[in-house]
Amino acid sequence: SFTIAIIGRPNVGKSTLFNRLVGQKLALVDDQPGVTRDRREGQGRLGDLDFTIIDTAGLDSGPRGSLTARMQEQTEAAIAAADALMFVIDARAGLTPNDRAFADFARRANKPVLLLANKSEGRHGEVGIAESYALGLGDPIGISAEHGEGLGDLYDALKDLMPEPIHDDELDEDDAEGEEIDPSRPIRVAVLGRPNAGKSTLINYLLGEERLLTSPEAGTTRDSIAVDVEWKGRKLRVFDTAGLRRRSRIDDKLEKLSVSDALRAVRFAEVVVLVMDAQNRFEEQDLRLADLVEREGRAIVLAVNKWDLIERTPGAIGALRESADRLLPQLRGAPLVAVSGLMGEGIDRLIAAIEMAHGTWNKRVSTSALNRWFEQAVRANPPPAVSGRRLKLNYVTQTKARPPSFVVFCSRADAVPQSYLRYLTNSLREAFSLPGTPIRITLREKA
Ligand code: GDP
Image 1: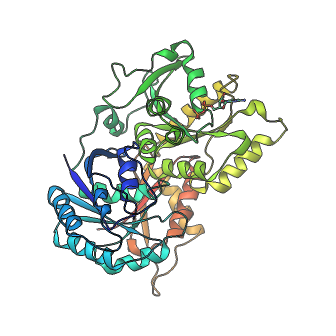
Image 2: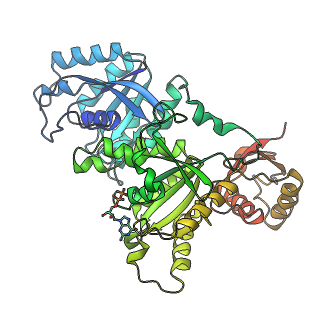
């Protein structure tokens, strides 16, 4: 399979990255430099990308600050075995002479290199990221292997290098275009959220008596662990993130769903139910998951769980919806429901919200209605002129649904500012009532 070697000087976080990608804590990662470990190989996974990964952390046994012959030898062996390299630096520490020495190996290898500026959580890595351009290994990708940040960017970069993965049939049926929604077909749903938000409780409630049937069944694919649920005639196929978690329940840290698992679940799903704990909702991680859903172009339902613990005041839900729109403007109007998985409250509304989000996500707008809106929207707020010349926006057409995607034909695609695209997106969302769904507008120059 496609093989990637993780290289870099000692203590930049290679093992942590290896563990993150392999998804198991195979080895103890020690903060001390110079901890002896063996070179390891494992099966890595990021989203739907599968690869073999070689960790050269065993090389870290050399005396601090020196690049021993053994390190050099093993790095070269790993490089020779690899199709691509992940070259890791410590973005907080900035570049050291040793980084430069390893960068020389990486360059000489003539293989694709991903330059990873690790330990970049928060804004701590900015200096190192800026310095690392000088290595001549391309644009750095800021990540935090420890905290699982930047993995989306890593995924994008890696996907560009790798041969096309073979998709499961089930994941592909997605692309069936222009079909009416078939109500007898299950809606694929992933339930995501922070640990302890109540995902398992909610899924178990939906499963009812069927809760024991969580093994992969016919109709589910090799590695997507899904369970079929029927709620008052509505079929759902639920991606069992809880099951994933159970499998890896080795210690408390592992309770956390890794980003690549989350990405897998999101890609599986048509609708993602983001479960939040009513007692502390809209936390950083919730917002990040919601953003992941938006970027992956899936429909979303916000489920505020543990509602039984909240004192119910009039207007409480309205206030939550306002918070959602303010914090997640990219998903404005996303359905939000209050539920209690424990007490089984709000489940009808949750299912209705899933159906609604699915419908919006599948929506198609007629070209004539679209262009009537477009003319009016452009007239009300014309695009800015570029170097004295008016930018001409010609017409718009919907290219696909799931999520609704549009192409605007114009005179100069690179001259349309992001803010103007946001204006069009919001206006489109209002005009055709597309609340809460990701919307894609791309620009194309008229031939
Ligand atoms: P997960 O990590 O998101 O799967 O969360 P769990 O389903 O394991 O739930 C975490 C804790 O919250 C457990 O103690 C549950 O009993 C509790 N819990 C889950 N849902 C609810 C709810 O709707 N109301 C209340 N009061 N507790 C809940």
